[in-house]
View 1 (cartoon, rainbow, N blue to C red):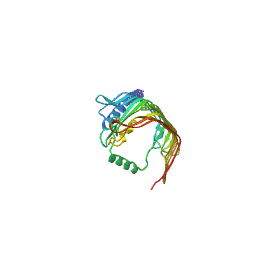
View 2: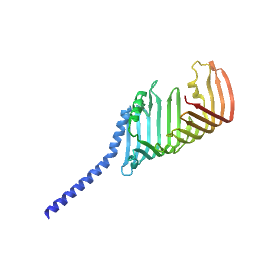
View 3: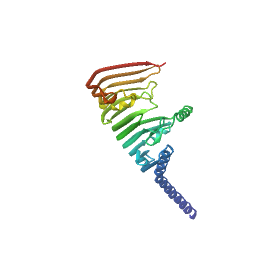
View 4: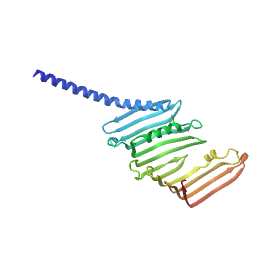
Length: 307
């Protein structure tokens, strides 16, 4: 009898110890994930990376990151108010990384040119061409590559800023979504929708894409409302013979891009309107003043054979 009580007492202690250990692991797991993310950001060149809160449920596979940012002195090249990810554990057994849902709320991201061939995205350095080639070679050598997919991706109320190649562009994303993108189902069309303001000009795009097909393609429609033409000056010759003083362009229509094994296809149907265009020459002399140019029912079909 005494022996059975001793064994019973030991089992109770073991069960309690296991429960305490499990609770401790579940409590510390979000901190471990946060530490890993911050360490990875530092390894990619972030000067200062901060994460305010992480909530992770290993049973459901849901991860929520709140108030993550990268700082460079007074600048904040990356700021995320909330990132929510729903991971499918079952897909891992099939060597597939499948995110059932990924939602990004109230974020800002800077893409900038740090040198002639160096770019930074959100304060992180982009690997050079040699590094990319090494990574690509490593993927090709893998016996069985992993698949990747996203059930639904949504980005809302976010800002993307691009500075480089003479451009200084800002895109305010009202709503961006991607549905049904799976590398293991190459003929399943991914549905993409985007609405926002490009340099304060309204832009809407809806498409269906086959990014993993043997002949990748994009079919969609778009509308652009009064986009300023002044940024084109960054690509004009620097001899000062002429420059765009003012003007805007609006356009709406449908498009199709197909990358085939033997030929590429580009189709466009729509219209283009140019308004208030002013071109200036040396010393600011006006070369052209155009009140409005309205081109309707434009059709472009381009078939390029791959040599």
